[in-house]
Image (cartoon, rainbow, N blue to C red; front, side, top):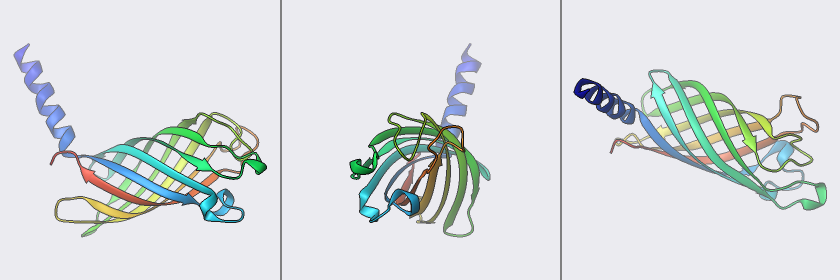
Length: 163
C-alpha cells in the first residue's frame, strides 16, 4: 500500500509541474457583435495540463450580452478541450477543440451542447507565466438551430501552478 501512495504522490506532483491556470477576458466579435464589440463581454477561468506538445483543459465562465432586443442572452459556459501547443522561444501558440455546455440558449446558440475552437498566442516570461490574445468560437456545429455562434477576442493570462 505504501508503494501505491508513493506512486500517486509522484504522479500528482509531476502532473502539477505541467499544469497552469488561466483567465481570459474579452469582447464579442464578428457574429457576436452586430453594432459594437462592447455588446458582448466574456470571462473564463480554466486549468490546462501539458503533455509535451499535447494539451487538455477545462474552462468555466460565461458572457454578458446587452442586446436583449435581438433575443440574445447572458449564459454560463463550461467546456473540456484537447489540442496542440507549440513553444518556440518565449512564445506559446495553442490550438484546441472541445465540447461544452451552456445554461441559456438564445438567437445565436440554439441548444445546450456546444463545440468550441480556441486559438491563442502568448509571450512567456522567465517564471513561465504568459500574456497574450485568444480567439474563441462557440457553436453547435449545426446540431441545433439557430447556429449563428459566438466569437470572442480575449486577453489571456496564464501562470503555472507549481510555483
